[in-house]
Image (cartoon, rainbow, N blue to C red):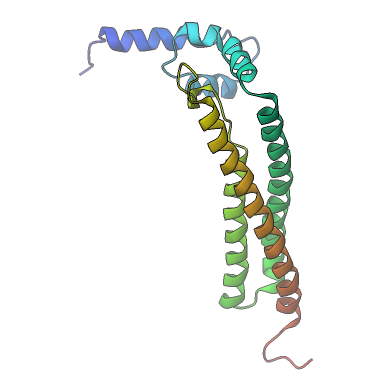
Length: 184
């Protein structure tokens, strides 16, 4: 039995349809993503989105904008290193792991790098106008809080990645060369 469409359902459907852009050759996946991220938005919000972003960017002090961009660039580089280490460990695991213990060591190493990737992704999280009160009165407090999180989290992830990469660099050759029960 079908439920009759009421005004609230119809209003949401109308807002979603009016918020979706004309296809203009966009892929079905792009259209799906657009509908997901704009779910429940009024068409005025979609129409003024560029203005909202511009006003938000203009409201940030230049030094804060520059600091966020610098952390973003550094976290991107660190995320690339972490991703390559995860891929590399996944590729060498069959070469160095002959026992469940050795495989467990490689899996644990991959797990540590996955945790570092989460930290890097948090450093890259978009800080936007939704984080501020409508009157902007908490701007400096929110910027300071976000700056501390990103700067210190990046520093922690960077130090951990350096230390852990050195550890992996030392352990992998030992795991490859050590063969219990085999004479050298």
